[in-house]
Image (tube, rainbow, N blue to C red; front, side, top):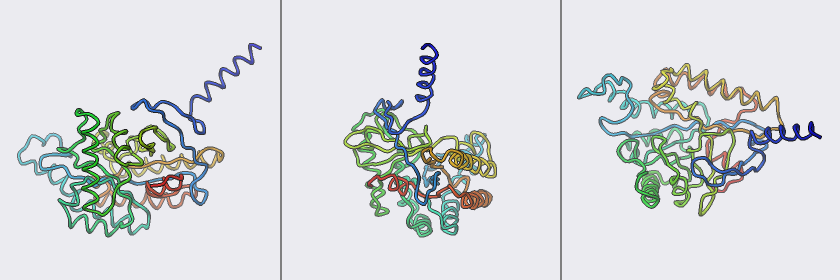
Length: 317
């Protein structure tokens, strides 16, 4: 009897170590109910869905990431301004052409001010990837951030303004959200759901889809793990595009290997954040091309976009 009790106790611990089919827990940020959304397989029997999300952003003069922090106090800081401006004028179009030439889907996380501030660049880029899903990414990434300290109603107004601006410039009413500078709080999830957002990239802690119990409707969390985002690796960890090439191939390749070894497990999904500062340079684009060509050879990998994933999971957008 004692052996049986110990065995049952161990099995209970193992069961609690990973989400089970439809398991409901409490989300650690929002404290709202969160339910796993297990998917047996993606279209054509694929087991790993990969979504590349290009962050198309504006910062403002003297604002934004610094390639050389030791020069940030200079006025003018020609090095860091050039780093940011190159990403906008050359990087964004180059990434669009690359994905268009490769014939693979791309998703766009868009600052609402980008199309109005850079209309010709936006027009050129959008022509390369006309079917790319547009995820709302706030108004800009420096001076117009989420009003996290002003309460729920202020966040709802900000989100509504973002959606209105993007719709006016692009004709698309975004159903997805990614908080500018990856800086939401617990209210943001409920505020986005209240403004009609159906899915968010602010959930960063899983390999599978999950559903957050927000009102008036649930919000789908699409995994966006911080470890694969190129900007953090590039600026904070000093990794080059060739390092990211190996990281992405290893990350997705291991998910595919796990799926082949355990075909009864749920299908996985990863949204990989990419930025024109990194993959929009000639060297970055070369590394990105090799990654896409590698993924195309992985039989269980589905290169797709964020909204195709949601539709394949049965969600109505």
